[in-house]
Length: 147
Figure 1 (cartoon, rainbow, N blue to C red):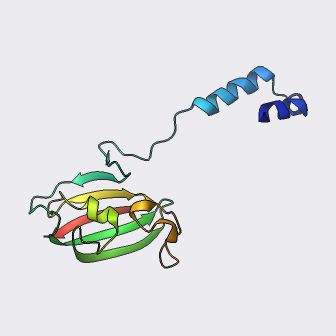
Figure 2 (cartoon, one colour):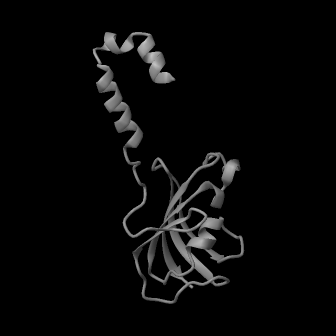
């Protein structure tokens, strides 16, 4: 319908675009592969959490109910850093966002991991503290310091 409206308004001829050229352009736009934000080797869970082990540690492995300490840097999808530092918490107890409770288990002390956390596993439609907008994907670089 939109293409017909453009053609009916005479914009194609006025812009010097042939109907065939417009069709080719529309096909390219329609069927071009979407850019992937996934990195090679990244795994995606059923609920959309993306995990990439950047480097595997050599220490103890973190499991649910373990008290861990992690160093982290959190960024919005546009690259804006919203927080960084270190935090201790018990894995799987809801002390942190769900994306961390799901993304930390299996890490070894000294290991580094990238977590791309969908809004549903972060702060959802509420956002957080005026810093994280509603429905924001969060990207974290984490290093497991201790278990």
